[in-house]
Image (cartoon, rainbow, N blue to C red; front, top):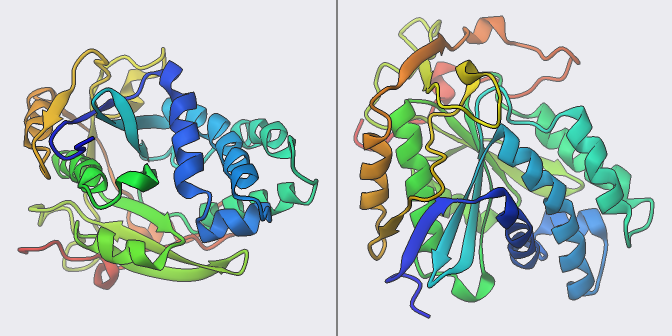
Length: 304
C-alpha cells in the first residue's frame, strides 16, 4: 500500500465513527496519558479500553465539530478531529455518557483518572474563541508516509481560511516538533496524571489583523457559514462542508486540491462576531484559570 500516492481526505459519516475509534485505539494505546489513565499492562486490553473511550467521544465531537478521515485505497488510515469555537469541551451529558464505556472491563479507579485527565485539559483550554484540534492519529504501520502531514495541512488551510486561532494538547514530546512545522507554538506545559503535557496554539497565516492590536485590546474575528447541521442553530455552524459525497485526492505530500475545494465552497462566509478582549475573559465561571494569551504569547506565523 502506497499511502502517499493514493490519499483521500474527507469528512467521516456517523456510521464510520466506530471504525475511527478502533483506529484511535490502535494508534494511541501506547500514548503516555492513556497508559497512565487505564493502568493496563496488556497492550491488546489497553487498545480495547482506549477504543471504548473514543466511541462516545467521537460521537460528541461529531456534533460539536467534524471528524476528518484519511483513506488509502478505500481503507481508513488516519483520523483528525476538530471542534468549533465555544464547543471545544464535552458537555456534562457527554462526560456522563463516557462512564459506562470506561467502566466496562476496567476497575472503578479508572473513572476518576479519566475524569481528572479530561478536567485538567478542560480547565487549561484557551480563554479566547478558537478551533480545537484533536484527536489526531495515523495507523502505526503507516507512519512517516505523509498522512499526518496531509491532515494537518488540511486543518491549517481551514483555519487560515477562517482566520481563526487553533489550539491542541499533546502528551508526546516528539509531537512538539511535528506541530511546530505548521506554525504551532508551545504556550504552556503541565503534568496531568503525572505525565508531561504540552499545550500549543497557532494563529492563522497571512492575517496581521488577527493578532492583537498594539494596545493588546483586540484579538480578531472569526467566521462561520449558514449551512444546516444536524438541525442545529445555523448561526453557530462551522464553515466546513458536510457534503459527504465529495472529497479530493491529495497529491503526494500535498492537499492542494482539497484546499481549492474548501476555498471554492466558502464564498458565502459571513462575519459572526468578534473575539472578546482578553481583559474580559480572565477567569472561568468555575474559578479555574484556563490559558489567557497576551500579545507577547501569540505565536508569529512564518513569513510575518
